[in-house]
Length: 579
Image (cartoon, rainbow, N blue to C red; front, side, top):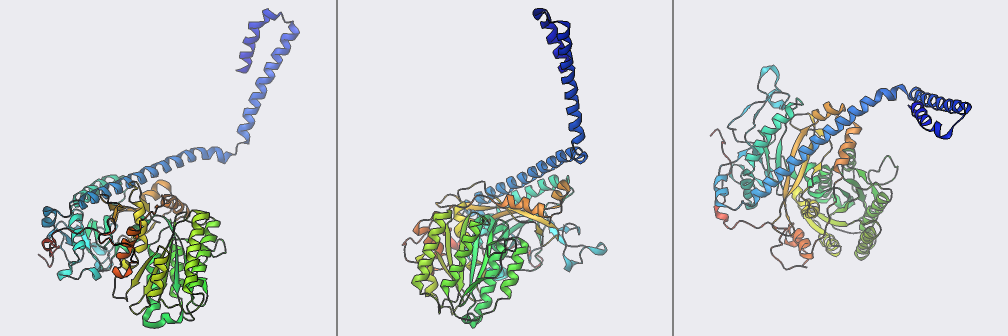
């Protein structure tokens, strides 16, 4: 092409310049030379391109198409989660209406005792219940109802007749969430159509309330009645607190052997660790005369916070279970080790990049190390340093473990550092509720973000035994300031479709990294007034307050009760005992 353009150009100008024949010959030779060099360059480029690279180009396009398809699937799931959140928030506005409460009486199905109206046998690939035979031999593997939601309540909170709750707020929650059942049913029908193209069964949609009530659809019989608490699940805490750095500081001194306090400390710490997700970083510090980190980051070889993957959480839980008590109680050593680990982690960019929570658990008796005043100075100076140098907001949560624990020192630490102190009773108490203060505080920072959802690391579903993940979003009463945290909505998703589209195993490192990227969402911004902070303390009882606010209502923290308690239904359940 260059030759012919060149020849035409020369022809158009030769009469103007009156070139000699020898000049014309030289010009044509130059054009031929240019053309040949161009052809050689193109051929060389083709020959030098690796054969595999040329073959991989179609694969690269296919890979891009697969990634785009997965993005569309994830986007659809997130949009559905936010729509469900809107339905529950709208239902909450109707919680005190006479119609809502009248329909609620004997209006819900109990996951342990109700017979479902449209129950049918499930295939073994839909649900596996070993107690029912696992679907072998042509028998009925399990019963479920795709048109009905069920309600579960932890046994510690279902103290009324026939396992009904007696707490007015729990009753109200059962009533207003029933209004969202129509949407949950319609969503499941639409999900069946959508997921059928991937030959995948749709999974559960549900709401977990901050008070422990749980409603899900489709309805299935609970295998273990009263043992499920949504507040213990990673999908709940991920959506209610966002990414965070969490350091648990555990007293393992000799006095912790009294009254079973060591066992209580282990149970409390494990309870917190189980709720963390891959967007979080975590460390566990044990202290007595001195302090040490019970598990370090194997990649860096130093004492840093580790990502809360399932593998790391299991390692931490195993380390906690092996802790033994002995020695004196040095508060200063425990906090110093915690702040050192945090600063190292932030400096080496192993952090979540978000808020910091230090959970300090002890029987409350300091017997070694610097006095309490020096401990308070260490905490205040260190939190200020993290804020100034690294823009990190650090909150201190102290817990007095056991009914016989000394409570003065731990409460003083919380009140003097803008923290929260919680007394934790012995094993017959609501341990999950007692440990919930840290995620409830962070939840207040998400009330103004109407687009936030959270993902969790792929895991084996309890019911189906298949790999799946969960997308969740926080639910608020947005009519008050700050918005009142009500709970979390969520949808389970089987990993089969992602495996088909991407050609990856659900447990692969590539798949894990994909969900890590999805989980690093916006950090909650905590900006509480003194009264709002005092309201969070009040959730643990009036004893936990620091006396800095006289407000009895704490708007945005304490739900307002419906005005007619006597009219609340006494029995929530229908179709029980074969009715």
